[in-house]
Length: 382
Image (spheres, rainbow, N blue to C red):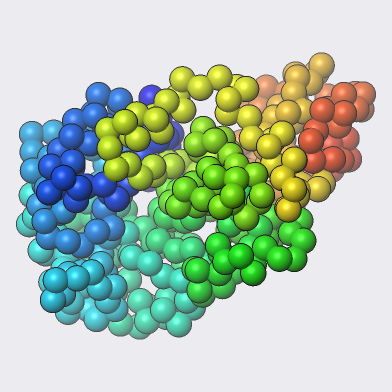
């Protein structure tokens, strides 16, 4: 298992994480089996959005004796009322739900306290005005949560939250089809058939700005819905008109700026093993570029996907990394010091480009790489 820095939190998280979708199965016994397998696989990060007390209690039992082997991302504002899940913005309910959760999990702290499911600007305003963000900050000050997170499907809302400087971890929906869709407050529109009736070309600019802002600010992204609820794995269900493999979906998410962890939902030990098998996949199995370039209904043109199909460069330039840092700088209107430092740390720089064009011949997306190398020299000075 490979581990990645979770933004600037100081935490090292397994790049394959575990969702909680299967924890309630087999009368909640699946939870313990999944945690046993996660430990064997080296998976140390999991998400717990479910508020069902029996799920939380099962997780608490599964963590007994090994709490420090796992990083917990669990959600505040997700509560249980009258036998069902409820998202709340009432501070009294949020506080009561948090105390109940901590008791059931049998832990003194969460590694990431995730403010749950914010897809509307008015909802974010309610989180701020109702004292929920202040409450999360107070919990962090007390050491009961180590870092503050937010879950969202809306890049405009997520960006507004990230720009406050309080959000350290963002849980966001990332996959090749969602990334084409504009911001909106109705998450169902991300997957609605009507949303794909028009020709879709290149990533939505709000989503690109979000990923790049998170990278620049050191906000770690934990990915939900990388398989699109499974639809991306089925050619008949995928709005792209073609299927991807689980490994391709995971690799796409992991190559987006700022992404640290892909949270793979599993309803069985075997499904968790299948996601973890990404670690042993070959470069050819991980390669999503050819599949994306051949999608019959949607396409990316002139947009770097950081897929590294352009390699190898005869000058040994890591074209994908150079382009990523260039895009970060251009989005900021100049090169912030952190971006400049990361660029400087590269073994080879754009100024070494001999303009041979070999990279452009290999790029499936028609990116003007030689022009990007010239721009990088202008921005970074080498």
